[in-house]
Length: 455
Ligand SMILES: NC(=O)c1ccc[n+]([C@@H]2O[C@H](COP(=O)([O-])OP(=O)(O)OC[C@H]3O[C@@H](n4cnc5c(N)ncnc54)[C@H](O)[C@@H]3O)[C@@H](O)[C@H]2O)c1
Image (tube, rainbow, N blue to C red; front, side, top):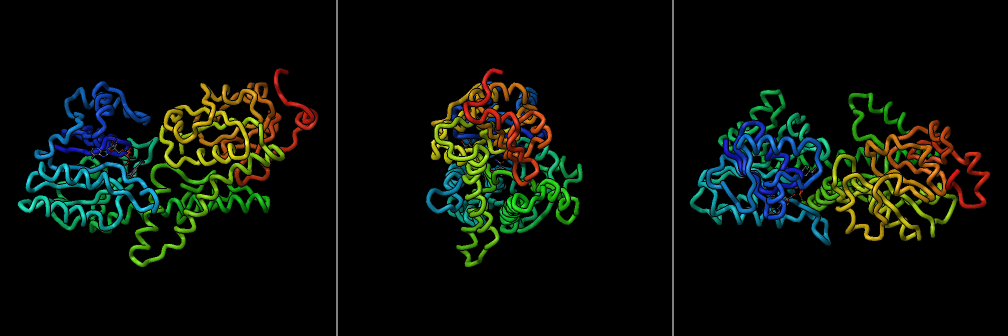
């Protein structure tokens, strides 16, 4: 089949290359000429494990092309729209400017029987509006508009795309349904369930799923706070809950709050949709509010770990991306934490394996370092904000030698309290009061002066 994907970001690029890998002939279109030039040179503009090899293989086999003009639209069996739908500045509604720009651009080029598939996350009713616009711009045509939301996770995007839990296809039109099913044929041969529903239902499945995942995270984070008060361990609580099949263990990791390009903006947009329709989503509203406050509140953990004001202190923040294995820093919890640390007068040094460039505009005062150890040099505390693999196995001896004070605030619960105790660190985690090792003897002995340094 011939497929055109508009928007070559995290979703469009991964979808396009996976469709090509299924055997389809795919053109990925993006208005960002620099991005397309880079892709043509074989450079991948985003950090996503396995993507570079898959792109190279499909280009060399002649199934994948890139263009910064709408190309192959008239010949495509299906045109997928995968452009961004960020939060609209000011009110939190999904900003659909890119979606409607694309629709206006491609309308004159579409074949009269084209299938337009929205892969971007769009509020309920957007498909109806796209259809109305296409009828207006192309009264001659019988174009079908399908909703096919995407559920991939950055960092595991190819695996998720090729082994989805479900493929949601929203249309009442049999021809459109058959075309989309054919695009995904290799997956349903692999037994991935296809859920055929109405277009509005498909649009809502995506938002309801993300709101529910956000709710799980916010829930376990509040339970973590309670654990700290009552002396329970949130990791064991989560495990005890998650082993119940009705609950499931995923998205029950306590931490600094959810971030990323989807959950924050999608929960907010869903709340706005509900308001517009006179419905209330009080649980989701609370989740969004609780999560917003939590990110900044993590700075209080740092203050507590250092026994008081942090003005003039140096804090090393390890990790800037919202999760590991991505360079995406959109709504990353690390960023409001850094702002809060700056507001409290701290000097913040940081290192992230992939997200330094992306984070810079949002954290201009951060001292960017070349490694975790460079960031930790002379620091009064190290804060683990993202659970990158390399931060899970830090050389604690080395860290202790180079830091001004041996204090670690582990917002991702990647270390064990007993190993930190053995390494003579003051260690603070999330929802694990037993992990708080304080004060270690050497810390107490040296607390009058500047701690650490060469030993
Ligand atoms: N990132 C994720 O993990 C994820 C997962 C599921 C769903 N989604 C949804 O998928 C959509 C895309 O997200 P993303 O993270 O891939 O966005 P992104 O910002 O990484 O990529 C969007 C791309 O679209 C391009 N673009 C914008 N307007 C265009 C136009 N008129 N013509 C051609 N290209 C245009 C941009 O240049 C950009 O490269 C969003 O609705 C998002 O909510 C994202």
